[in-house]
Length: 400
Image (cartoon, rainbow, N blue to C red; front, side):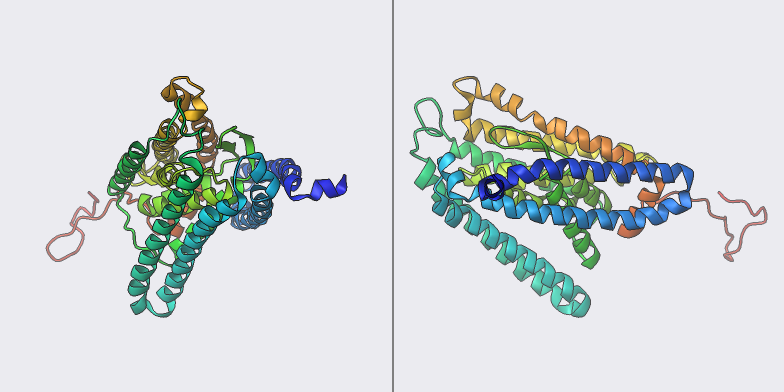
């Protein structure tokens, strides 16, 4: 029995409920303690917040690494592959390895860029361009490999493509392209630039890692992919609020790649884009309303509006993937109704995130901390003294 518990196929299932309830307890304890300190001893609350957040990050990172290792063991085991009609060798060669190479190239390029930003600023532009080109090439190569996997395993499988269902490739490509254009277009409403420095890169890594770890804490899981998690999108959304939607969309893109490695439900390159990089890039739109002046004193509202926009775009991305790639799952029913209903779990997931976000952004200490960290605090109109031609206050000495 003990050896069965530790086997690759069962270790993750045994570990998941323990980690889930332990994490819920840890997060709840930190929140309750913070609320008590906030109202009872505000001076102590600042110190508590400064130390509690890094400790939570370390805990989530450890849990995330454990989950990731066990998840790889389960998803790429012979038993799992046979049970889910997959070819383990092809899945590793055409899906896992290309995605890991893309992630490695991107992360190494970012790390080198961050180091050179401090050590040799003159070289960072060239490294950024070269790293960006290599990352794009690695992504294209990964998509080509997934396309090969589709043609070898899915195109004539008699299930995804059959007399009653089909993968609509042209519609998938056009949907992915349209959403990419819309997401990139919306980021131009963000006033922050896309220039990364060491700080923004470091915080991107921290927030993506926290989201990735929390994504393993699943409150419940959907049968054909997707799950409701314990606030997994909150760290990336907070990052977007701190550093702007442009950087937020990039962080969401990286998080989407990690989600693909974590739970690879891939049958087509355009479906991969819609369900992973594109869908989770939309999370970065949570920071769109941060600099809107009417909301500068009520960050809860600006965060909520951004989160709602992000969730709507994520929902549309998943729905289009469901309609054009997974018609087989509809069982002969209207595929649009099926996809709309199935992917509605997105709104439950985001509702949890919004509630948590409102609680977090209700803390003035937290808002001041993220504004100070990002150094992009929204301008607050202040009264200044009138001056005469000599540059001295006027005789009345009154401000405007």
